[in-house]
Image (cartoon, rainbow over all chains, first blue to last red; front, side, top):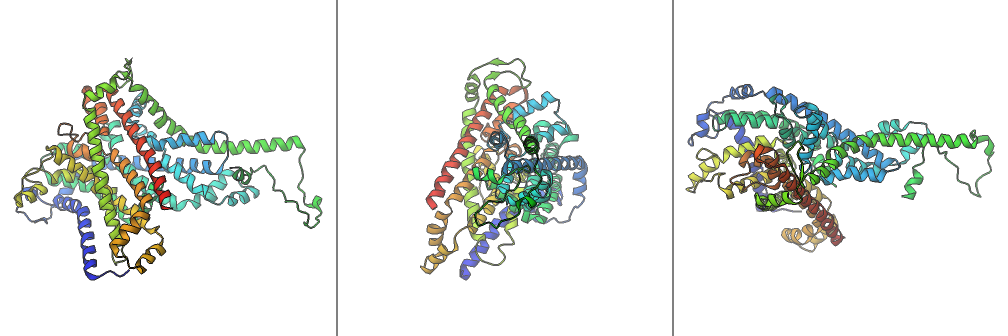
Length: 274
Length: 339
């Protein structure tokens, strides 16, 4: 397709505008985080900081237990991601490869998890956790998030189209079922596992509503919830520190996402391929 | 099903050479494996099948048990509980029939459903128009456009609490950048205390955050288009616009339907930006159904009612199911129309 020069200019211009719309709030955050508070409020101050106040970032870091928040977020995101990918992989494999009594019923059972939004069952889940005495605990945060119906569904689709004769010949050679799963089929699904792990990890890292209702102790809070506490403390004052706090929350994820952008994109696509 | 079952021979089953009349005569006894007596063979097969089943159940159990405990059972709990009055600890329950639903509508629940519809429609429209537009542009064979794709997924992956708070600061009266620009242009100030501005703000943030996903999904959909049809249209002298309007968009109808449904379901789950930007206000103007559930159950403390929250959660479930059913119907119909 040949595209004329004026058309090219228009295309690049539109893409640039859209890109700027996406990036602008983040750029503004980063610049504000490094300004003095007076320069943020002052309408005549330049867009870029007059003197770069790098000290705002440690000041914000020390104003709230960000280290604790990050550790908690990492514990939660790693545990739930391993759980969701692991249980999904095992169940999806079994539903696709084995014939056993009750297979259909169990599959629809797991699949119903796709149909029931987590927000609908939020209150009874909190009641169950309260019955277990798990409110304000790591297990209360993690255990309800260990299974993913989507993962199970996607892995089942994947293994249904995987070649079955690999398992046949391995069985004739006397390999155990576990061995067949682990050494033959799990590696086959590796590209999908990589994409799914990336996107699920980012989702768990950013989970906000569930931790918000399950935890009240600061020592258990994840970064999103911790940030709201920090925002509440400084609301209306010290916008530069507030923006520095946001920067602290955004930066690690941004770096990870840009490094793994191929996988993030793949993950977004398989997540939608229901 | 029968075919796949045949392929699915268990480890106990022996591979049998198919008999055929033209088969060369072999000394079959020389290659025949040692045969067990019938009963022992039967038992071995049962044992092998038992092992297979045990493996299957062990694989399925974690996912099933967790889904049952944290999705299926709670769904029945919330439906049952929406018919009772009592506190969050489930003590002092008294049967209330549909009174919670009545109370829900008396306590602004109907307005909240309208807000949900307004937000979701606005969110889906803006996300789709922006996402599809950018996807068409990025799909053009021009240098450098591939490199900027990653840009659009950034809002999707960074914590929404942080980015929504940036928006909150941008909307500040006097000092916020939006208001400084408006003042500079001689226009009146906007504030999140205004219901319309608040709604525009949460839709704007939602679309800003989500439209990158539409871009990614649409780019993938564009790749699936058959090249020969588009080339034929170029040969026939179709302009770029005609190509888009009469060939690409109709061919993309199934994917567009699917992306619309995904966006709708995402819109129904909006929470974070409402929490950060407006807290459901002013005066319930941005209190979506989910936010209503949150407020009644957790946000308002003792002033909220669990029974009413449960009733709204049930309504939210019904809406989600209706959208999912619409997905099956619409996507199916769109797919048939194209093929």
